[in-house]
Length: 104
Image (cartoon, rainbow, N blue to C red; front, top):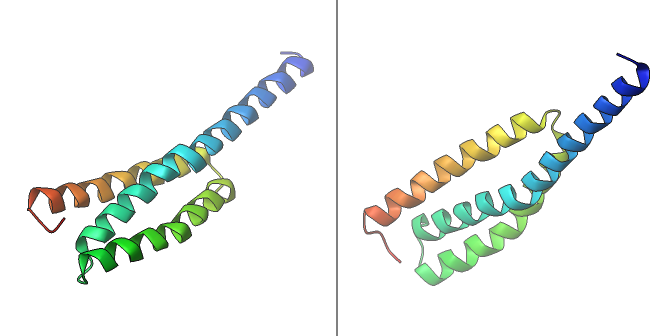
């Protein structure tokens, strides 16, 4: 393989990794943050209106932390694995909360 072909292949790999991080920092982050907000709003042992307000305000902390983490981790695949694991756990908790007939 020529040096030019190897350089082009490495550039393609880097742009793919950057694209994966950008999508994770936006779309994946939005999914995880919204699931966390919903679960916290339903499970905090305070008045429903206060729980909704507090969890929504906490989302303003969660979202930038995940976005910064998306560009700080070494591997975009580990980033995606963490986002998917968090989404599954938070989604499962939210689903259990809804299925058990908890407060609205």
